[in-house]
Image (cartoon, rainbow, N blue to C red; front, side, top):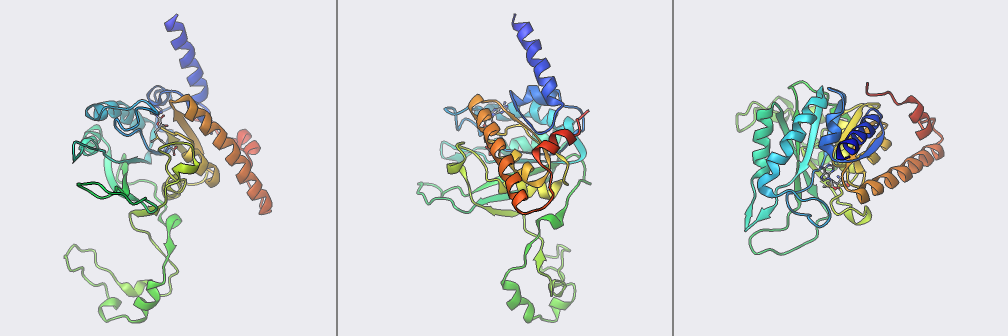
Length: 314
Ligand SMILES: C[S@@+](CC[C@H](N)C(=O)[O-])C[C@H]1O[C@@H](n2cnc3c(N)ncnc32)[C@H](O)[C@@H]1O
């Protein structure tokens, strides 16, 4: 009997996994296993924190975290296209007065697994409440680890350019002689700069620190990230029509970002309540985005036309 149920579940999953723009209810390891090789352009996700949230969903003990994650990252590596990216939003917890080291250990193990640890972005939670702890200050940032399969990967830096800012007016009106040539950096790192290159420019490239406010209180999920977080990475690493996977989709934030940016998504969520929450969020966001586009008077894709047009993964 258990075997029949298992086979039925597998059949159900196979049917679902071949379709885009779906949130799938299940354990991500089971679901990712049935996705085709090299079918995903970007993976962006925030997995459960170690042990932290036992009450709301299955917590992973700190000392088992790496062991728990590695089979998942193995499958993620298989389904990611060779020029794709994997952005892992994670932060190690503290226990017994110390920062735990499982994220650092995970990075090392994932490198052994074949991943390149290409970059580390920092999400600075700019609306962090004040607080008081005896041995540290309030935690106001999280890691967004960027892994790739090879050194050459898709990256659209212009998509995330930011306004130059008012500092430029002052700085660029008083250029010194060294500002007008490629000035060798003082650390001799070889990364010199020619400040005059930025004269007349309205937009510049951002840094690897993202200053974004949290949005948990209006998302009904205790660990939701703000929609601007997956949006930023989706713009940076994908083009419209690409496929984004979030194996721990929670309240559906990554799917909402994909709807806004005309990317396809596949989301996976273990907890039934969150799965339903994500479905509702996706549904109302689709309607909202369609209404906004209609009111803008532009001819844009609709959920209906999308359903007909969505290419299959196989
Ligand atoms: C940190 S939350 C993600 C929140 C999400 N980024 C959002 O904005 O709502 C992690 C989610 O992973 C889910 N989860 C935990 N273990 C899972 C598993 N094995 N497979 C799929 N989802 C899982 C949890 O139920 C939780 O909703």
